[in-house]
Image 1 (cartoon, helix red, strand yellow):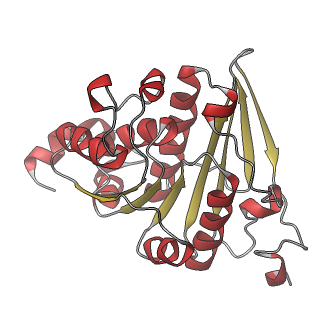
Image 2 (cartoon, rainbow, N blue to C red):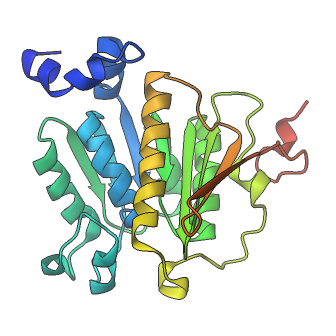
Amino acid sequence: MNDHELLRYSRHILLDEIGIEGQTALLQARVLVIGCGGLGAAALSYLTAAGVGHLVLVDDDHVDLSNVQRQILYRESDVGALKAQVAAQRLTAQNPHIHIETVTERVDEARLRNLTQQADIVLDCTDNFPTRHALNRAAHAARIPLVSGAATRFSGQVAVFDFRQPASPCYACAFPDADGTDGACALFGVFSPLVGIIGTMQAAETLKLLMNVGQSLHGKLTCFDAKTASWQTFSLPRNPQCAVCGDEIT
């Protein structure tokens, strides 16, 4: 780490739990983020600020005027532009010392698996069940951690599935039915700060995993109710009949 990096990340380095070793782990990490909307915008801002060395942004959507109510990387002047490209520009201005790669076409499951196999960790910042399940299968196959977030109306949730651990449950254990429906904000609406709260939690869990700091939310589902400012955490047991990971239980 050079003098510039030592100063830039000094507030991390001062933490005994992180130090130079932990910050170096971030600088060497490759993180895949699927979705650059509300959750992704919040998570990416902190991953960038914290110094994750290589970020891969996957999103084929364009900025819509309704997005700027909560997706903090975008402005009205960005309407019509590709979200991943605008996000990359803003994040590069925030931290020009990391590498940011964008994928702006809709990826099929084979491409998703290829992208996942190259990553150290993957964030699910999407808003539909089919993509979440495809990403769960890809992360499980690659044996890398999956940090999942969701937010709609006034309710949000975060879960971590660390597939480096042989007994890890997966997203399909908790949500087995991919019926084609989704929780898109366009259908139900969303409280603006909620995506920031959940996306920031995803960033925190990602950084902790990359630096091996503290205790992650692995195997748990943490839910937030913005109307009551209350949190609840539930254990997620592995489902022996799970279509993705059930056949591995011994």
